[in-house]
Length: 396
View 1 (cartoon, rainbow, N blue to C red):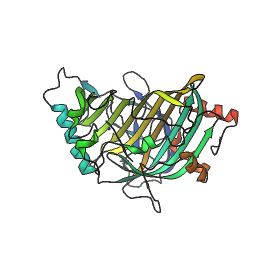
View 2: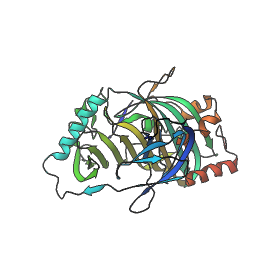
View 3: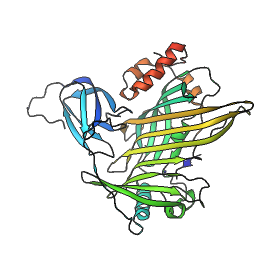
C-alpha cells in the first residue's frame, strides 16, 4: 500500500602519479553567518561517491582518490565546486542564495507550476536509479532514548520517491521499555510524490493536476542559485479535503519543473497502533521531508526525514510522551540494479527488527561507511546504550 503526500580533476602535468585513496572529513558552513549547514549534499565530481552532511553540518568521505573536486549543494545556498588536494580537515563555506519575495502571487502561477511538476514526474518516473541508503531511527519515551535502529539498504528510487528496498546490513539497540517500533521505516519507504498507477484527479496529493481543488497555495519566494530559479510554494489543505490542516512547502526548479524539496506537517499522516489494547494514542503529529538533487533525466533522491510525536494514554496511569525520528540518506547512485538483489516493493510491511536479526553482522560495512557518521548528540545516545548493556546486534 502507498501513502500519498498532500508530497575534474584538473592536472597540469602530462604524467599523472597514482592517486592515493584517502579519507576526507569536514564541515559545511554558511558563509554569511558561520552557522552549520545541515543535510547539504557532497559528491565527488565525475564519480558516484557522495554523502550528506549531518545535523551539525559534518561530513565524511572514505576511499577518495586525491586530488579531487567536491561538488557541494544545498537548496538555500549557492552550489559550489571545491578543489581538494590533501586529506586535511575541510571547512567549506556556502554563500546564501539570494531570495526574492513577491508581494502577490500573480494569477494561477503556483497552480500551473505544480501541474508542470506533475507532468515532469510522469515523464521522469520511468527512469529508475539504484543506490545504497543509510537509515537511522531513534525512539524516545519521555525524552529519553529507548531504541536505535540502523539499516543499510539497496534502494530502487525514482524522481518521486522510493520504489523498492532490499536489506544489506542492519543493527539495533534497545532498552527495556513499554513501547518499541518494529516497522517505523514504512513511513520512509511508502510515501511518494507520484505513483503512475493512481489517477491524479483522485489521489489528493500536492503534486497533482487538481492541486487547487484540495489546497490553498501561496508563493513564498524565488531563490536564485546560479542559473537556477527555485520557486518555493506554501500549501495548506482545505477543510473540504482534510478535517485537520496539512501544511508545508514544495520547492520546484522553474526551468526544469523538477521537485527538489518537499516538507509537510500533519496530524493525520502517521498513525501509530499497538497490539496492547490499553494503549490509546492521541495528540499525534508528524513531519515528513524529502530532498532531491537535480538531474538531466529527473531529480535524484537525496534524503528523507520522518518524525512523529504523540501521547500514549494508559488506563489509570499517567500519559507517556512518545517521539520517533528517522533520517535516510542515499548515496553511490547507479543506473543499474545491484547484482543478485531482489527489491521488495516499498509499501510492503515488514518487521524491521526481525529483518535486522536475520542479517549477518559485518563490522567493516559500518566502519568504512561515510554515511554512518553520527552527530555529537547521537554519540551520546549510543554511549547511553553501551553503559546499559542494551545492544542487540549493534556493536560498540
